[in-house]
Image (tube, rainbow, N blue to C red; front, side, top):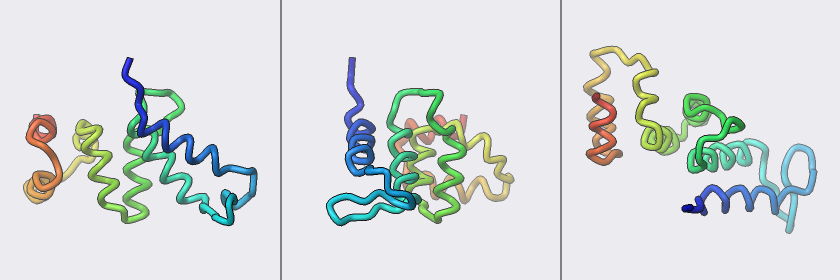
Amino acid sequence: VKENTISHSVNSLIMDMKDGTPGGILTRRRIIRDDVEECLCHLSSLFEEEDQNNPPPCAIMAHFVNDSWWNGVWLVMNRHPSIVKTMHLQTTIMADFLFMAGKHFSLPTMMELIQ
């Protein structure tokens, strides 16, 4: 059984830093804001195995779009290429999207995008 160390490491970081301080996580004179914690949780869930407690990929992508973190959006699409089909892109925009996606994704991921 292959252990997912990326997700485990992020979750451990979050749990180690929590001390119950409302409005942020305070430890060792550092504060991690709630929005940063949420971002770390979303990143962690991208690398975890399927879990009912994890937010769906479209919710994670929406969060990253709202934060204008475009590399996070590409990461979600790279991990879950089928999400592109739910975006309902217009035909006129699809060519530009695939051009940009080609700069970020591997060939197998691109093949899954256009299937």
